[in-house]
Length: 239
Image 1 (spheres, rainbow, N blue to C red):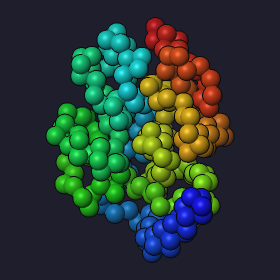
Image 2 (image 1 turned 90 degrees about the horizontal axis):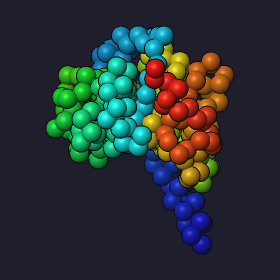
Image 3 (image 1 turned 90 degrees about the vertical axis):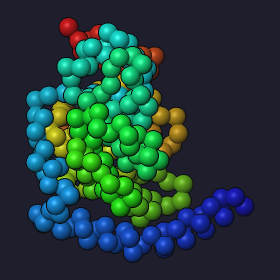
Image 4 (image 1 turned 30 degrees about the vertical axis):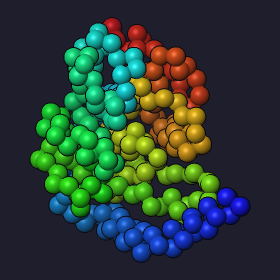
């Protein structure tokens, strides 16, 4: 009975969201044709700007000792979720990825402390975004139209100026942003290998895209040495 009710609610939400989804598809088509709204000009300027570099995506403090933090100061680092709350270790990421309104509310007073803040454009209608924010065209509702109830397939975008697909976590969005910046080596730290079906599906999609495009995505979280992404000890990355 529960699955039946859930399926009905799913279909009702799918119908409700259809106009919004079509609007987003129309906007995406305009961007694909090179018609770029002003709010994405900063993102456009960053395309392939980090070629030849590597980056870290840090979701929490797991594995970030004070020594590791000092090494990371010399790296390109996206902080997401609790990865932004590392001041107690004397270090915090230079960049921030954010798309959840709840997370934005919690971190709004701290945004000026980051060099760049990559934020989904879904936040623009709810908040006054400060100068260092780089907006990206975030699309979440598409999942209703590529899946059936209790299916969790996602898409991965290699061109964040056209679209950044939701993958059940801002980590997934930052993977797409990193690819857009031209980064070929991406290391995850504190981004736990997923146990739920949604994140497993998302990570597998990212892994497949990476393999097909010559991109290396590795998990550097101590104690997690298998599953979707290959494990790479931090000691192998730092001289």
